Image (cartoon, rainbow, N blue to C red):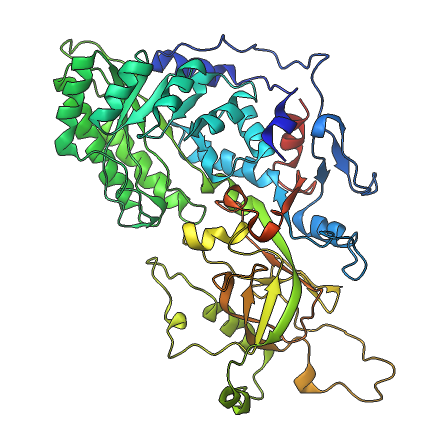
Length: 557
């Protein structure tokens, strides 16, 4: 859904404490202070939370283009949607792939953040997933927003968020974008070159500036230093130019790269930022903002938070960086730009198998018998997990992807979402995905507690009554076999998984599901070949889930 359809008539009360904290410390001027009371005017619409147990799923959509939000966990939502789809009789696009978004997961990640990094205010990286309900929830929680374009800025402003809660974190902007930012009253932006300073002087001279420095991003999946960041050696020259132009530089930012897997990179970056603060003092500036960027992920967040928090306390405890008055102390505000941390685990994607074909590529291969008999199911499950695990702890490809050890797929499955849509993350974000079985021979078998491929050990599939024979062990639908998974387009680059292990009983019409699909997926999906991007079904989570009640209350304001 477009942001405008969701946000047009709904404005959330802002977190007054967060508003005052950052506005006062940054010295920004923007919209008036939000009201201290959480009220709903006659013109505002409450968002419905549909109870699955009370309200039948009849495609209800409330007025003004709001998407419904359901109550119930991911498994319940997946089953609910599939119960409405008959792949043999549905209309065109009726069996399209779809996301389930569990908004309680976003809430839980926010609670985890403020507990682990209480000094660091999260500014959500909108580029990662500009989903309107995600933005709405994070706004209600008092987050700021990291925007990279005027379009992203506008989607946040449409929430009723003050421009003071936005950082325009793009060091190289078009002149028209700088002019528009001034009209949008966004007064905080980053830079890393003198041409940007000249541009800002001309089109937004009252803007508060943050110098983005270059850090070591070699321990990240997506390295950004090739494109952005000023080396420390060039910072004095940039500050001298800013001073010459009469521009106000208020702090330092950095980004260790997206998907950082080495917490030490943050400690090193904080040390560099401290040196940049000292350079600011030498240039006559009093820096009071530190932006510690992005790069945070779910799996190693606790380790990163410990290292980052310690480094901040050591380097920016009672530091003073005034131009000459050493008796003056100004509190340093610290913000960050997490993206995937909030949303990656909150979204799962269900895809329909629309076709399959033999995976053998030559007559010689057709005659080879590669299958080993007698492998028990537990061993197959373990082998499947290992063989499809594409990223080792050091961020490099696992040895299971080496040609010498890799089995050749015996079946090619085609699904209705691929690299030109939600799986663009494989190309642009270096993601690795693992298909799990959602239905097998039209039976719902999904169990989120099982490892990939996520099928049960025993599945009482009936033998057709007219078969007149006992089930053949070789025809066991649960038996795993090597396969590949492809997207729906006409391009051969549209390969989602070169090697996976899935049950041989999978049929056309069955469904697969992919976890951790909330980051850099739908936001970059195209309509190549005239195919629609996958839609999203929203849930506040099951009643037993932590955050379900809180999300319900936040979104119903």
